Length: 343
Image (cartoon, rainbow, N blue to C red; front, top):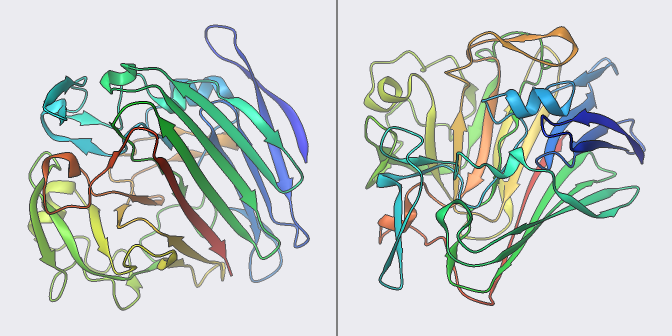
């Protein structure tokens, strides 16, 4: 474990960077600013070390950035239509920060806060946030913990734990952008993706699900056989037209069990990432709206230079009776794990 300074926020809050290394020389870095994942360095097929996540060099750049690079997203990730929720007959208004909808519980994002550190050991770091009743518009005082663990078999395990004193919505995710050829290597259209999902949730022009579960069979959304991200992305298909590429939620086949649900691979680097989760959905996002973002090490990030694999409850599930519910009841434990394993 190496702990270094990660700079100050606009308000002068000092932040730290925690770097973990395993026996294979794989290395990850996480920061208490936003409980964010800033670096994932893995060996490629030649044994050279390659940083496969987009990021910034210091906390102030994360504070200024608008792409959610490596972010821990909560209290509810993705979109909520109409920016309001109803729990136990009471309406709670959220901020409209995405047209008339709410995106990632903004604008007071969890990833723009300094989290407390509960534990910092050789193989894991646990960040803690106390989210008060009414925070971001949601009911209940929420205690949330996010633990990053680097395993000896080259996996980044992200575990979430939460308890609220009122019924509330909890739907956490990690918003890392992955590029198996390295964060500054260009677009990922030649990299291959597999997703264990027979369907996706159809969405409207504002990316709010309609409630329809659409089979992927015969569509560009079918990743059941591994294919290049760029193969079908330019097809004239409603979802791709609305999202300007892939930016949808897939209905995973894991049946609520922790299982491998996706994979990303590059022939060039030889690096493969496997995605595991116990959550029912996953948003594949191909960085369709990245425009000349200045990243770490002098890199410049552009459109489709990475892909996100955001495990989650389905977007707008609070308004869809046929979607698995994101409500966590008073005193119950919110507990879920997602893992990105490099093989």
